[in-house]
Every structure is written in structure tokens, then in C-alpha cells.
Figure 1 (spheres, rainbow, N blue to C red):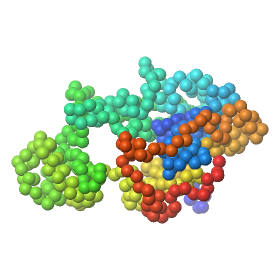
Figure 2 (cartoon, helix red, strand yellow):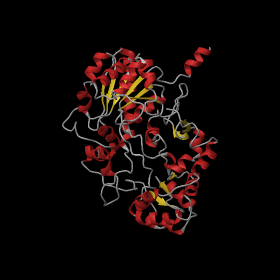
Figure 3 (tube, rainbow, N blue to C red):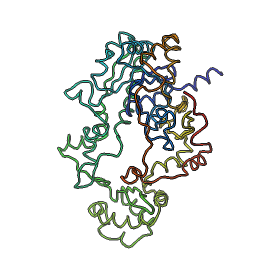
Figure 4 (tube, helix red, strand yellow):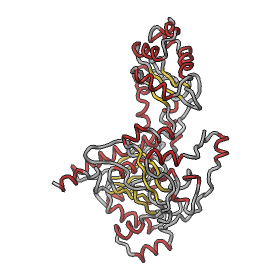
Length: 463
């Protein structure tokens, strides 16, 4: 009975080993989710080219080892083991092939020429392990005339057609402030890997997955594609408006940069909105008498609603409208998300202890399974933290052999290139609009909210 209970508590991908060659966001996001599912993810970095390990330093302090303090790396690489191998060196390639022999999945997001030029593309890896699963996720796929084009999240948002739809009426395209397509491609990669693992469990055969980052993004604009397919029409940019709902928009509220989104689908919700606003006389205007008339009179309608929302906080507007069943949501900034009682009760954010920066709230995988729990179990690896475990424990190298690899810079315990260590210039960032405000007491607020110490700890000598 006890064994049966223990089985149920195993995470879904326990026993699966993932070799992670990804960089930046899309690939690391995928492998982070696989790690939260219980896979043993071994992230490989180059000794002279670590993966975004500096930048966004906690408390704006680079510390003695800035390469272990970067916020972006920490966010995207939890639940992974960390090693480094120089794959441009023959001994590095030999090490990588040894790993493939004991692995299940290889994930990479380089341009198509990289793995082939290194001599470790899928046909080679399949010779090492017949049932290996490999996924490549370049910008434009592994085939086609654009396969070797360089890609970045911001350019892919545009190439996929997404940015063509985001912008205000009569204005130019506006891409999103973040590389929105990166995590989208990452989630597609997780889905593809799970399907390949299921296929292997039934047939004993591995396979190769070709995932074009840009094509994953096209799935987000299905209605625009269908509009042209069926009606030969190109959808215009609409800002925050909707093809048929009105009112539908983002309205300013009381306070600095506070907003709320309201979406009214029918006459019943319109009447409820008018009731929540106190039944002003203008609601009886003929221009707002029907859904069609409201849609045609959106400029005036938005002005009137904005006058009301600007007298209340975004929380108050959201509460008032949700109470009368009108879809409405406050626009939250990251601070409000971290201090959100709903997310806290659901366990979305977890406080994870990191040896260099202490306890920090981090987001989980974004879903919960009742029988096979998924959660963050381990902080992002320090640079080269798991070299000994992987090279000696897993691959059977001797300490002398590892030391020789270090002498030849095939692997290392510290980055072999010079990483920038400058703290951010917050005064400059504020002036040019990179940040809109700072809370000096944020660690105290977070500690009080989560009930555990948040921030630097005394454990700063682990390496």
C-alpha cells in the first residue's frame, strides 16, 4: 500500500533524462517545464559563452560571482542540473556523445547549420542511441528557403503576422514589449516532446521534431488567417477594441498608471454596467441603445466610461463590475501579481532558496496535476555546479580526467570569458522609461506576504 502511494506521488516525467542545449528564452522555457514535470534536465553551457547569466542582479549587486546572480537565467533554468562543455573541441563532442548515450531527449534551438557543423545532428545521434528523441526549434524551421535566417523573439513576432494585428486604428504595427512568441514556442516544444515520448513508449522508437518558432506563433492569429481564407479580407488594427463588442477597451483609473479592461458582450451586460456606474442619464442616449449603436459610437462611449473609471481604483472597478457579472479585469503590474492573494492561495508562486541570492518567489509551471504533482524543486544551477556529478557519477570519468578537461578549457567551474559586472543605472533607466518606479521596501513586503524571509541569505559560498 505504501509503495502504491509513493508511485502516485512520482512526478510525471520521473526517469526521463533531457539534454538541454538551448539558450535565451524559448528553449529554456520548454526544458524548465520538463524539469518541473520530473525529468532530469542537464543544461549544457559553453565555458566561454554562458547563457544570459548576468543582468537584472538582485538588489542591483553583482556580488563576487555575478554569473550566478542573473535574474533572467535564474527564472528560466530552475529544476535543471548545470554543466559546461566546449562543443567546438573534439573532447567536448566526445563528452556530449557520452551524454546522448544515457539520455532520452535532446533539445536545441540553434540555427539549422549549428548541430550539423558540430557533427552531432539527428542522424549522428540516432547512431549513438537508436530511440533518442531530438527536437530542434530554430526561428524558421529546418527546411525551406529561410531556414538559415537569423531570428530573435521580436523579429519572429513580426514575421508570424502577430505584430501586424497589434496597434491602434490608423496607426503602425506595435509589437509587444516582450518577446511574446518565445514562451509560446516553448510550450509547443513541451507538447511535441510529450507526444514523441508517448510514441516511444508504445513502439520503442525515437524520432526527430522540427519545430519552427515562427510557425508556432501563427497559431495565435487563427481568426485573421481564416478571415482571409474565407472572405479574402485582411483584418485591420483595432487597438483595444473588438470586432463587435462595445464597450470593449482599457480605461484609466485613479492612481499612477492604473487601468482596467471592460468587455460588454450584450444588452444585459450593458444594463448591468450602467447600474454599476450609478445609472447616469447619458446611458439612456439613443447612441447607446443597442449593441450596433454602441459599436458605432465607441469614441464617445469610451470617453464617458473613462470619466467614471478615473474616479475609482482599478480594484474597485473590477470588484463592482464582477459583482454584477460584467467581464472586467484590473491591469496588474508584476508587483501586484507577486502580492496577489488569489495566486498565493493557489500556490502559483513558490519561494525557492538560491545559494547566491537567498529566497525568492518564482512562478511554477502554470498547471497542477492531482496524481503526479509538478512544482519547482530546485534553484537554477550555479555555473558548472553539476560537472562532477555528470562527468564522474553519470559518465564514469575519473577526477584526473575531469581535471585534464578543465586544463584544456573543455569544461570549467567558472566562465572563461569576461562577463560584464556593472550594476544597473536606475536613474538612467527611469529617465529613458525602462522602469516606472521602485519600492525600497520590496523585500520586507514580500517577506511579510509569503511568511518567509525573502532576499539575500548567508549561504553565499556554495559553488
